Length: 88
Image 1 (tube, helix red, strand yellow):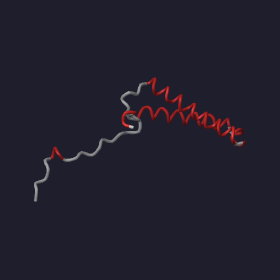
Image 2: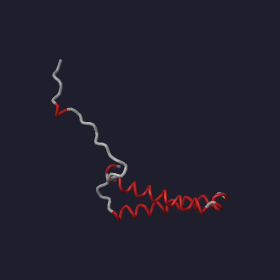
Image 3: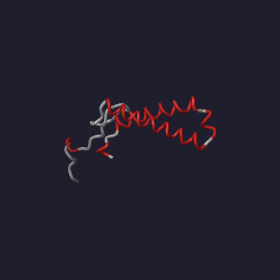
Image 4: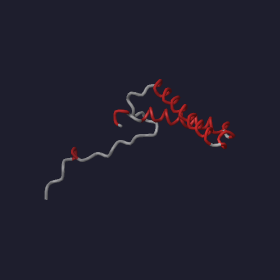
């Protein structure tokens, strides 16, 4: 039976990453804000598409439009802060 590997050669568990820990080394405050704005406009675009194709969307704009903008901004900021484009 072969001897067990030395302690230093044993595999280490991966380091745990928190939800808001910075994983993108190129992310700056400006890039996070820019990404949040771009994703926010994407949310507006989704709402506009729905408003042009479905009648029900037009009546819900006071609730749906700000909610989609906020969700888009949060998603954009988190994606820019955490996703490293070099690892994609």
